[in-house]
Length: 68
Image (cartoon, rainbow, N blue to C red):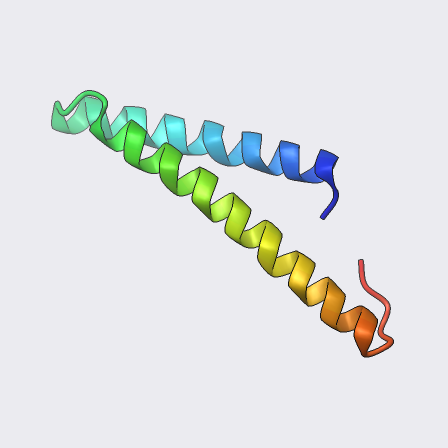
C-alpha cells in the first residue's frame, strides 16, 4: 500500500468511526467517549493493516510471486 492509498484509507476509516461514535454518544448520552475510542481504534487498525500488507508484499517478493 503506497502513501496516497494509505491516506485515503485512514481518512475513510476515521470518518466512519467518527460518525458511528457520534451516533453511539448521542444514543447513550456519554458525549465524547465512543468518538475517542473509535478514533483510536481507526488509527491503530489502519496502521496494523498497513504493516500487515507490507509484510505480505515482502514475502511475496521473496517467493518470486507478483503482488498488487
